[in-house]
Amino acid sequence: MNPYILAVLLFGLGLGTTITFASSHWLLAWMGLEINTLAIIPLMAQHHHPRAVEATTKYFLTQATAAAVLLFASTTNAWLTGQWDIQQMTHPLPTTMITLALALKIGLAPMHSWLPEVLQGLDLTTGLILSTWQKLAPFALFLQLQPNNPTLLIILGLSSTLIGGWGGLNQTQLRKILAYSSIAHLGWMTLIIQFSPSLTLLTLLTYFVMTFSTFLVFKINKATNVNSLAVSWAKTPVITSLAPLILLSLGGLPPLTGFMPKWLILQELTKQDLPLLATMAALTALLSLYFYLRLSYAMTLTMFPNNLTGTAPWRFHTPQLNLPLAISTSATILLLPLTPAVAALLTL
Image (cartoon, rainbow, N blue to C red; front, side, top):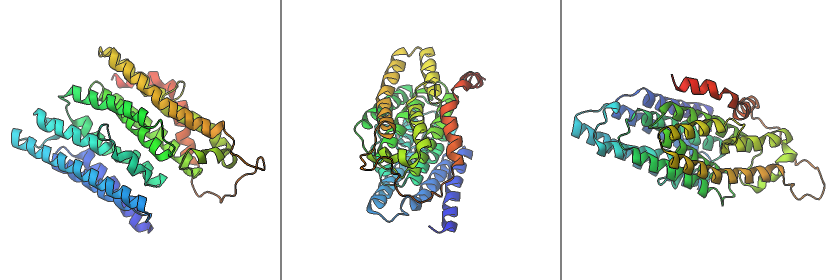
């Protein structure tokens, strides 16, 4: 892709998200979401491959549907209450419609089925943008929305953690596994959003760092399915030895960074007298942990069948920068000791 066009598209992505961040009016927020969607579509379709075109079409239709529902709900709210302000949502009907529209936009269960299919058709770089940056604008609206339907959010959150864990169990394609991982993490954020919005933000940022590391590791190894991970020991031995730690951090295993948000969320749910919900969320995390362990096993404990032992596969020098991966991997593995400081900040 022409670098000038790429720069314009990336600027459009940034502009759309910034407009949504800065808006207090529903029309402006909707406009930001639309700019965001239109900017990523050429990036998704840049590889002229039937799967990429199919993924782009599915993404466009899903996002257009969600945007139409959001616009209809905000118009209904203006008609019922005379308010266009995002924080003045008082009527339960438009609030529920907007919650469902935003859930469809980010891929919460049961409106999740587009996400694995779309992510599977993209290259890893665009997949990374879709899994991280594209979640920011809808979450900014989620955080501003005063939830007057707590049961709906709990149902969305719990079904997402369950489907995110269950869906990934049988997968061999890495991008689909990462899509289900995304659904599960979004479920955890939705569970806690009405009780502690700052904790939702912390979980979102931690998820971004961990997903960034995972995508970069797969990108360096040019891996798209579980079998191709088995040769990574011959390509990048150091990264291969660190990759299980990144994956287990995504699974939320102590003493890694990914344990911090899960720990604080379970603690907050227990404080809110929801021990059953906390137990169910913790049990669904075990499902996700299983497929991260499967990936770790494929990467580090299996040797690719090779007649000549220890022959490194031929490869060109990768143009990818190693510094971002080094920083994000360190953050993914080592930040758990900061939990007391983070917990103190959350109570401010």
